[in-house]
Image 1 (tube, rainbow, N blue to C red):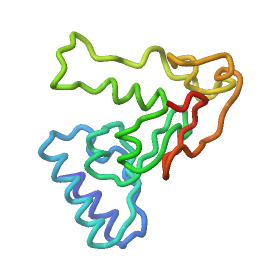
Image 2: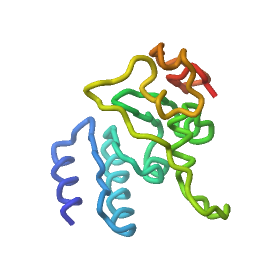
Image 3: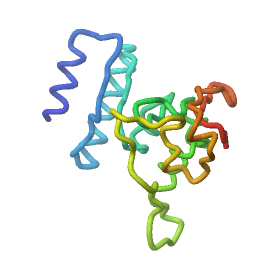
Length: 162
């Protein structure tokens, strides 16, 4: 109920943009679905744009049209929902999808992303993900690359690019 009240307050003045930071955290699945339906319904009726910040890839798939994957404070991959979900290209994005349980596979353990994120006050030279990346090279550790278009509206920040 508190989430609904906060959403109602946020939408009361008909904003052009709504920024929702983890709006479904600590909610059970039923209430989570109701809150997401409320956001989508109000967004569609009022034409409000939505920036959704979340770790829940299921919520992203259900709510968003465009996706930006952020690592160490910068976008490492972005594009349409279909581009990013059907063709994850950055090793971090691939790691996120690899850590999701698959009910059709019988595995003893999930595949975690090895290592720890860098200290945001002491970011390394080169790619911020290089220390955790299974494909990192010396060039990755030395060169900080820019987002580059790979197809359509799909961009990635990686020397490997798939």
